[in-house]
Image (cartoon, rainbow, N blue to C red; front, side, top):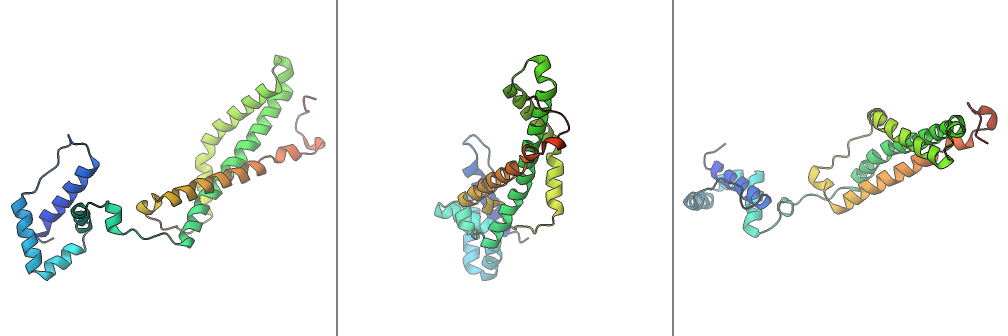
Length: 207
């Protein structure tokens, strides 16, 4: 890297750090004469200006000069429709699994507790449901890694969204909506034990 490039990079980093940290933070300062000389060098050397313009530090320096946010200065591209669809699928599919196991285990564990131990201990059906929900939550924590791995095995393409793009408000809304949709579908599918024929039950009901 050219020695003339180093001062502007250091200045950009210092300026960006200053905007993100508190006033008590210690930030390296660059002498104003060095910056003045660098500005003169940029005016006299088009090759130097071209090299500097290709660095992220140049965009940060311009943002500080114009009083703009770094993201605005860097002109982050808008996500494409295809990227957003893939991004939504990356959150829908795992949460279908979470919802399925959460509801299925809650129903089965709650029904087992209700039919086997409910009468013996004199607990209500609602208490049995609460115990079943607790068990399903605990199991869900343990199998979360398995669900995510199974979702990755599907081989979905990478959405290609950068960290800055994922910070857009409508992308965060898309993420939350996808998770809500996925878990709702999973919970509906996880209600399959309620459709069991009586003769298929592994234990008799409390009734």
